[in-house]
Length: 156
Image 1 (cartoon, rainbow, N blue to C red):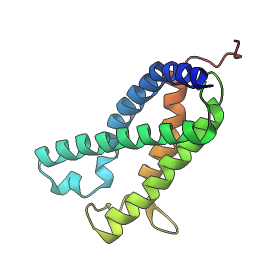
Image 2: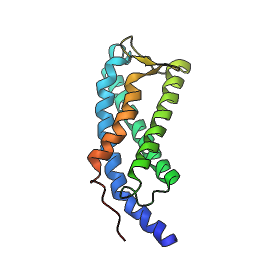
Image 3: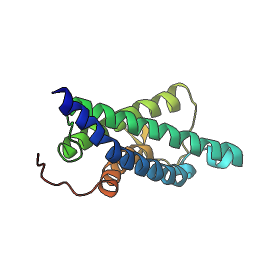
């Protein structure tokens, strides 16, 4: 049993690294593209804007890593991505979405750390911005598709 788990964890490293590297690249592009939906775009200095993009992309990478790890643990998909790819993807996406809804509510409404422009569509019931919601709905499946080879039946 312990040997199977050790072999499973070792087999996770390369696919997880490819997935996370892809998530990092996709989130960097997404963060830059959605900037006009935040007041920082019009009010911030170039240095503040660059810092925000890098800071948010780093945060996205941490969310993606934590979501993937928790998803693998919750689904017990020790042979991911060869087995359990769908369940890991669903759980990781839901974790990312859940954290995003919470974080946007906390930082926009309570802390007022950042502000949406009028152009940002907001989703009920907490007023989460549509762009960050779509980011965590769309990017994990896209990263999984891009970074990982097609699933093959598992053989011993």
